[in-house]
Image (cartoon, rainbow over all chains, first blue to last red; front, side, top):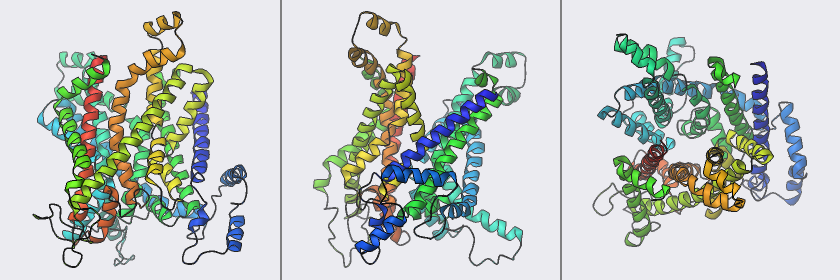
Length: 323
Length: 280
């Protein structure tokens, strides 16, 4: 286990280094440099441009810039945001909790509702319910999250006035009005963005669980359990489900990138103060140190997620760590 | 029948696959053929009293805040979205097949280096890869957009193809061809590539849906297709201003995306099922 752990962690580190270099080179692949978009209301004089280029190190050769960036990264320094004039790491740290709350809620919904619906589908394979659930989840999968978000914000938030269409806290709510009122307010703001993100992503969990459950039901031990005369509910949930739910863990690592990308759209549509809306704003402001920082954090989350998934899998299934 | 044809035939037998294929063909035909018959999607015929008209006889999807016909814009936006998706997908599939074949067949150091690169590339969500390039770009030309989407879409395909090649490499007929002294080129193009075609077909069909969503998202962020050229994502961005007063301006381009992507996914699923059947 120890050697496997070291090897897998080293592999994750290599992946992350390759990813960082790729991101850096991609950003510099576009014509011109970030300053060409920075002039704003008045054109900068050539002297101003030269000073700014020197300040951001853009007058250095590309490899030198990459070296400086990597050095800063090792010290935990991601540079200063052009738009906000504050360290990128500080901005990211402020926005992380809101994104974790939204992403965590979506994962929880997908893994509970998705597992339940997927199992139901497997048990009623070929029925009308199975077919309809497949088509409905695929419709969700084919729907652009930003469009669904706008439609829900308009319909539920503005037209029916059932839930707040944007933000994370009501501006009118007195912060001193007690923990319960604040929590209810937060929950009401959370429902629409979480629902949007779940609807567009739950298809994967359902499909995976359906397949895993069908597979588990074919094993000889199911026949044995039935032959022993166990009640059908016990056969399904104690024997089949417990084995079927296990491979679904891998989906966690697989779907993290999708959630991260989806949150860019959903958070900006619902003005949710997380990393996604920060990244979208960085794109709008051409704030490229901030965009780089957000992309880096997104990639680290993806690499970490896949590492944790493998760890969990190896912990639960000895066959993985022995091979 | 060749394996690829056989795969298509079986997918056609599947009702969901057939429905997906038919709708996809209808959308493509409308996007290709209909624009000359429709009002000019850029024209603003009645700016003084024809803005934000609800759907009706003259304008089946209504008009937008500049009095442009939403139906005409959805159709010609489809032409652009589909063209971007198909061309970018063709590029991704070609790159994915080439790199997967090289990594799988050459093996050794080539394989290790290529797959480490693919790991790194897959760690960055594709949206962020594109945001990083496009954020600095003033107005990206559509050809460059296709090139960028295409070159960021081959990583997963190359892994799939590599896996398949590793499996095929141990088949008796490949060993036989090698023993007969067939050159690498012949083994790759005559024996390995045709056997990965079904896999590539599935990846391409499912990938078209993914790229349509991706391009719409980029255009929605103001980074893909730029106005006044209509695109589905760009139209939804413009419709944000009139979301409450004229919801149809944004609802129809979104529905067009859902219908097209859903059809591609249904067809892709049917193709995958038919390959699994054929292999079993």
